[in-house]
Length: 109
Image 1 (cartoon, one colour):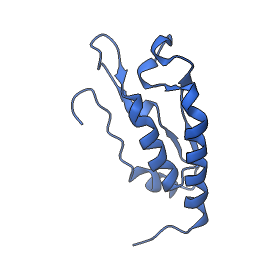
Image 2 (cartoon, helix red, strand yellow; image 1 turned 180 degrees about the vertical axis):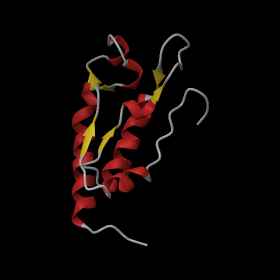
Image 3 (cartoon, helix red, strand yellow; image 1 turned 135 degrees about the vertical axis):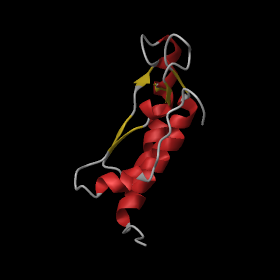
């Protein structure tokens, strides 16, 4: 929370799903910090898996995750990219959450 921080409202995911179109969650751009490094955008990649897990638990149709072998040396958007080496474990978790979310009907209030 604060300046140069994007705020992701998870309530928007099921709201968008009500349109009948597939909802895709962008886990890495969700942690971007526009202008956070002064002359360029920063980010907090350590929170991308947290937001991705939340989106998977909601049952989004797809996930967008930017990755690089060495995000700190990536030509652009490095601060938000996931290191390639952590992707297999994250994807296993996301697949498990996705299966659970889609196996049960949502609780409607």
